Length: 280
Image (cartoon, rainbow, N blue to C red; front, side, top):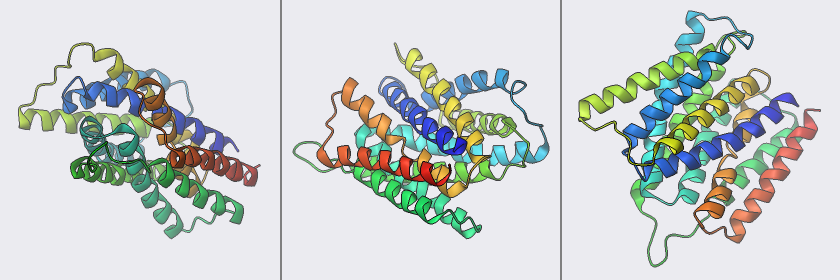
């Protein structure tokens, strides 16, 4: 039950982080937003390391660094998609791909949730698909570029979830330290090679800081949930994050919430309840 609760809260926080990250990319270059959010997250997690149980080690840092490289690339693709596409389409598209990979890997590794939990997993997958069922902008079709970038981001996030799950037992939050250093190095190197500026646009700093802190907060919740539950279940629950992104986009940006998306949010709540029942 603890893993279900942590994963559900994680999904809400991830969705909020994505919303603020999407706002920031509309005012600044993507690499600048990614690097600064990663730094904000690093500054947030460092004070937490000695407060929560966990032992640093090469295994924890190595798995974290692998996850960080995948996650760093995923964030770049994701923010590029958010900058060029509709937020309420990009987030669910990414989530669909990011959950498929961990579920397949978890089942291949021998994880076997209870039958009702598997039903909840299937319901959650349907919820993610429905939440992403948005029409193209009026008068045209959805641009292919953001969709491809969203799918690539989903693969990266899926790999991020899988690799963090492989960290040695008892490593606490230390894998996140390795992940964040690796992602910062990756983004800084890409910016140096491409010659892109890392200066944020006017008024973008508050959204960047909010996105970075919330993203790392969600990472912490994911690690804690993954240490207590099955990858198949935790990854699926975390993948419901587009629901909170969509609701914020609806309230703040006035993006449409159609009937299918509303039913998807309802299915998401049902999936959470069904999985929670099987773990109590």
